[in-house]
Length: 62
Image (tube, rainbow, N blue to C red; front, side):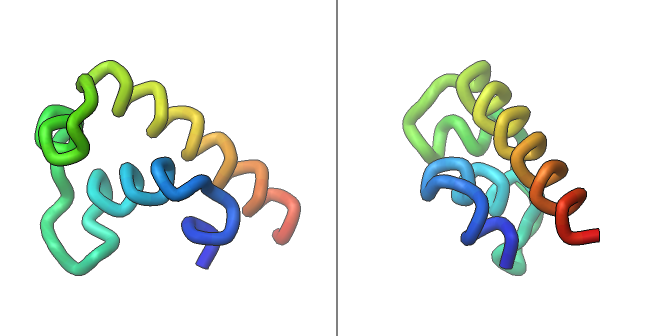
């Protein structure tokens, strides 16, 4: 719910792949990068930004 409503499409995609939120196994940053056609370091930056957005959103609703 929060993933799709708080994050951009790309951020949501990265988080879903990294944490296995689609019912599949979680992927490494390298695997995610290959699948998305971006660098591993960019996956890391997107993931960090997305997790911070989720922390803020969850903090407001608790």
